Image (cartoon, rainbow over all chains, first blue to last red; front, side):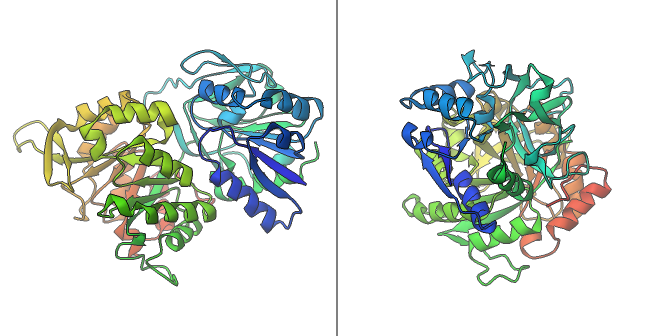
Length: 216
Length: 258
């Protein structure tokens, strides 16, 4: 089984790559983890991971710059239903639109838009940076064995924009930052996390393990 | 609720930890990667490497250290020291740093902050501020930015500078009181609070921590989002967990599940 992490020039994929490899090794899974910017490699992937760091519009442009990638993603993930995980801006790209600096189109798989976090309380700093818990989680295979709620485990967030989903059913978990902030979205074979599983120590490695075993 | 962060900082020179981490039973106390793994296991919320290698040409060892740390530790890593150009930042990010801290280069050329934030996203650009009190006892508090380990004044007002670099896109400030650095008498709480209240981004308090109560003061009274410390952790005066417990006892939110 082959896991492909899409490399489209969006920041550092080293940590994500190593975190997935670590889980594969620890859990004795018969999988390979590949970084690739080749649409044909993604077409043959059994599971697809879309990371992303930086600004929404930049990431969108980066994805569009890879020949055939958008079409292949649509085919593999949307039509063939292979498990897909978006991370950070890779999660935000699932939305219909991003409004960071300029309005740009997302993949539109999770209807909604990505807007700036605007806390009422001026003491709440932006970016929302650091460790926070997951709340109001819908039961989901990717959260198996991961305690949620105020006394639950923490995930590492660093972002100034967040995904506001049109359908509450697409929000698998939120985190609290003066208001509920979307932490995990999901629909069918697609999930996305605003936090960084590859930087979230125990929670992150458990989440990645669940993703690798997930049979949507 | 967002947790306050406890961040051990390792001074790295020519790829080795300066003075070494002495509280842990490490095979090699001078190996930054081994220290990073130990702090990861001890529940640190982030790690910070400060490179104090004299020569810019010898930075290859730092890149190697960052690469190996990112392979072994799945937690956020900030790297600073001697960062001068967009290329320096790119190299560190590609090696596995999550955030890169810039100091002197930002003092000399503020556009580096905006160019870096535009290129890599402000969330990964930390501006390190070394400040010293320059006001007299009877005057209102005033702090100035210093470079070269606190030896060289710049004439820049610390609060105005903090505002300026965050407006240019810095996503976080690493604030060190050069009056307090190494003294163990506590953070400069007035400075920390003046800066934290002046900007919309998180501020990391640094310089002068000698007790757990100092950490509580840095967050509760200084309004910092995170506390950074070096020797009290490296020499085993306190563990990361003791620091977190002290913060929790003061009613501050901490991550105890690590």
